[in-house]
Image (tube, rainbow, N blue to C red):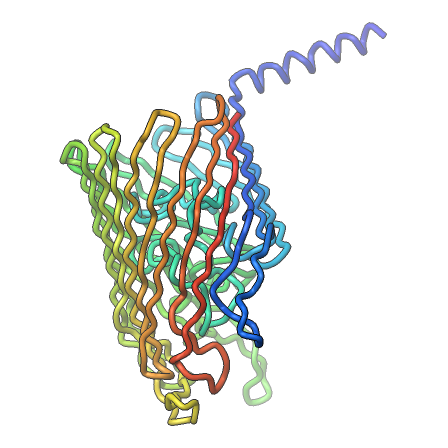
Length: 454
């Protein structure tokens, strides 16, 4: 009995020492849609019924730091019932992700797992932080609405910040890519980040699955970040898309087995180059500029060239500490081909010819003014437009949204969001043979949600 008591005391002391410096925190989010409807009519010519309830979004986050931030991590659990909230992962989805990090030396840090919060991305204004947690609490229209669900003809493309999140305006960070990353801090102002994919995650580059090591490493990321004191932050990045990789394969030649080097799928691009600058020198105002160049490549199967594309992102934030703040972001992507053939059609839906598929030209513009009525009540007016070319019908589509919402500090650690979302996705060509002249309905939603921090 005495031995058991001694062992118990020793265990308690060891456990107490291990967790004495641990700091735990968390966040709970619940969002839903109270009412939804649109201006479409049924066969009798009557407006469709307004629907009560529907979309659900739930998220729980637990974070921890150890030893004065020398280590830590995060675990996230998400579930929902609609593409509009939580990344567009489909109806009735359940998703978990997490990571751990360790910083044994001031000049070195490593992390393993999945970090989908965009912590490594270069967009300081135009990315996740544009509407921030409001999008997860469903007050603001989600930037992620076109992830999953729909098809290439009919994604809910108008709301997305995909030009930042998916890397067509700023370096997007690691996103849903399962990875091991290493950071070096050779001097105070400089951070070098190397990201190595380890499979099992959804990646913006490569397929994110388990591959031979040469192919997997071809999806690597590199980011150099330099902070100029009282001026801003400059970043230069590269994201591999698989075209640099290779693997080995045993084949039979002239009756003998030999080992050959097989180049990574030559239908894949080498990668993208990113550059950005975040200006902080002017008091009460921040601005950022991001550029991406998709490197040219050739599809060895179709013998078609991809001549590269250019993406541009601009963000602006005005906040002088007064009651009024303002944000805007404008992103665009031009040029480039996919390396594949695509059928084109006349506007009556009849087939015209096959041509080399071009990447659509995309332009997004969003504004977000905010007025702080009191310290506990803020009102926002989120609005935007989007334009996309589509090659098959030689046309353009235009979409828009208006999304006023409010933030209320309901209690210590408790936040409430509510809003009204009105949007039209633009002209659609959703099925084979349909024309590009069909207008989508104007849709409206009344969402609300809570965030709780502890």
